[in-house]
Length: 208
Image 1 (cartoon, rainbow, N blue to C red):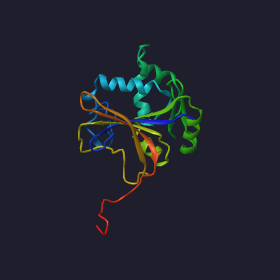
Image 2 (image 1 turned 30 degrees about the horizontal axis):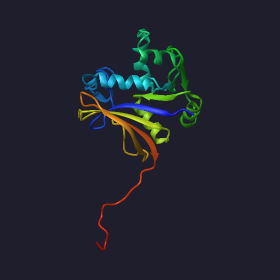
Image 3 (image 1 turned 45 degrees about the vertical axis):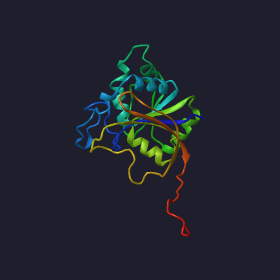
Image 4 (image 1 turned 120 degrees about the vertical axis):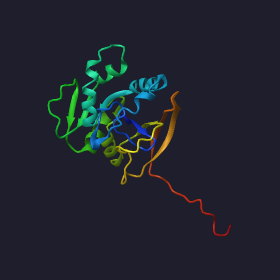
């Protein structure tokens, strides 16, 4: 059975909206799109190449799918691993409105999300990867389907935008697997799901 693995960019104040460009996701009047771009470097590129080396299929939210569709099919360099994997491998998009997708090897899923994604994990050879797709990711987290998070924290506070972890998220504990800090100060940390959080207290014992 494959693992469901997420890669997501967040700011220091937890915003995931539009890291890659000013027109990527302007919902709510968001005007700071592209905030990740100045922090790209060789360290980050190596990490992304390694992630894409593990993928067996992609699970993408509708907005992220549309963003990717507008860009990656035009990248035809055979040495570009990211383009090769995105263009060739299966892509699954939960959507009630997407019809007749033209990007190669795209399947729209519209049934029960938990059942559909569980079935995809079972039949995927390699990782079932979610890139971006913040709204979908929140749903997957609340369905307890995320196995691994690659959380890419960019050293910038935006003060506006859509937040990844909102009130009402399913309480979930993760175990740190690995991490690195890029030359530009981006923190890339990988966490595996460990179950429900445990709780304690720093209060002194009554007889102390």
